[in-house]
View 1 (cartoon, rainbow, N blue to C red):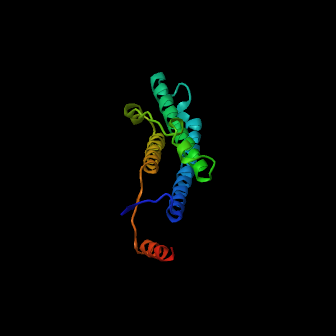
View 2: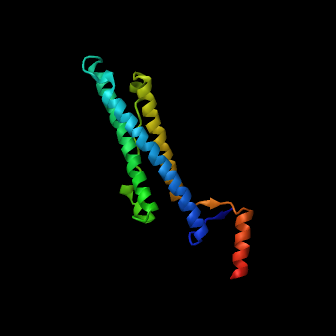
View 3: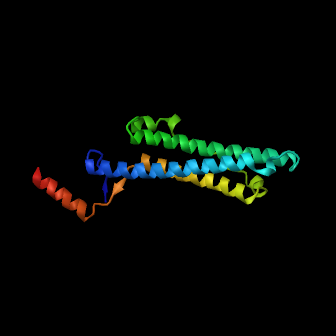
Length: 163
């Protein structure tokens, strides 16, 4: 295994392609989940006054806020990554503190236990999505190792022979 060579156009191109696909896939999933969460939280009948006690309503409102905040943070970070992918930002600019994912406030398990299944699923999905985006952020920030397979070895031998 070797370290990726940032000056090698083959390494840069394959990394950019993979990065672009990961970011676009996660972005599409984030937008879909944000739409689903918004639709659910805006139309869910249990939000109607008088159907649940005030303390439960406050807890639910806090969980809705945590969920939407989590999703918006992921979407903002992914938009930054898209800007890097198309050359609008440099990787250094994207790594500035205000463009990185921060810490997400975890959901309150006691409150979540009292929520309908669909709400719990949306909250869990937002937490999982945030964790995946955080792992991607960490992976993009750390040195990447690539396996020098037979095709890569052949390319390197040809490059050495040509000059």
